Length: 459
Ligand SMILES: *[C@@H]1O[C@H](CO)[C@@H](O)[C@H](O)[C@H]1NC(C)=O
Image (cartoon, rainbow, N blue to C red):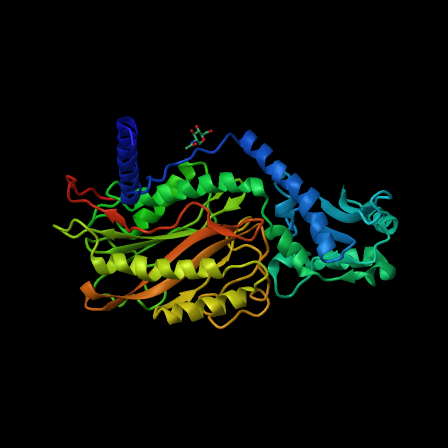
């Protein structure tokens, strides 16, 4: 080995050691991403919409062997799927708006068995009875074997046909066509559920922004112990979301778990405004909407006590050895073709085997915060969920992994604290799933001691 080679290897060694140290010590701080202009956002969203119409709808019509799908609505009484199919510059259906999706199968002579399916979209907008004869002409010309109307008594996403609209359309279709009407709730569910690949990058940026927001909220920039209330932090989130030019789909929730409180009783503290104190475990549930995509995130923080310079070991362990372990299990159990109920059962079994007591209530996310697709438990339903729990995971879908671990904290005389976490994942086209941004592995820390704390009254 020459002198230079030895030198090179030695420096390579140090570079690797250095890189490993840097990487293992701290993850990069999440940063805020700015949204593009409204005009640019509209262009991006319309491209996603076009892909859903061109690719997703024909694939679903084939999958469920449906020839015609009719979505019918009036202004302000839109079908649920309307929101997943409208152009970005449309804000409501107009007059009476009918969208008819007709399956068109072309058989190519060459290649013999080669078949390709496209969709022909008929959009009818009118405020006279002419719309019904136009509907009849379109249906007669298509001569379908099967017609789907969005009626379902269980799944809201598949029940977008309003009651009066149903009466009108059934009359207009006539006996002959009515005999071809069938129900296929999975059509609406999977249209809303299926993600377009190009959505991932913007979604990751929105998610990093949410992490940046929570990191800021759960710090001494926002929280002054003995002064700041949980409600102050809630409204701080609302203002910050607004400042990012994003909106939300629920009022953020901020709460504390405190030594001496019996904080395991569900929802006991909900709605109660509390002044944040040193030694509190902080919890938040925050969701934003940007590009028509919803997020849902729950994180935990800790307010250092006087003289404390790190999170007590038992609290750190609650996150790492309980809540993170549950997240890993649920994430691993989410597999294509499995039902929500199967995922729930196998997750709870593995969680129990680890000796962890906890609950799982994970759900699809995307166009809606609680979006269409298989539910994996609900807070009050840990056995199984009939209907919505029986739906199967499909590729290109997103989930919010939402759960809680009940953790006894040794430093708090064994007091049990619910460690509630929520983090979104995406299932890719191969069925593998990934955290959209990343999940929380360190408590957010409010270290107020270096600050010259001045007591100011909060508005
Ligand atoms: C929000 O939108 C306004 C108006 O277009 C713009 O001035 C501002 O910079 C935007 N804020 C962020 C954080 O993108």
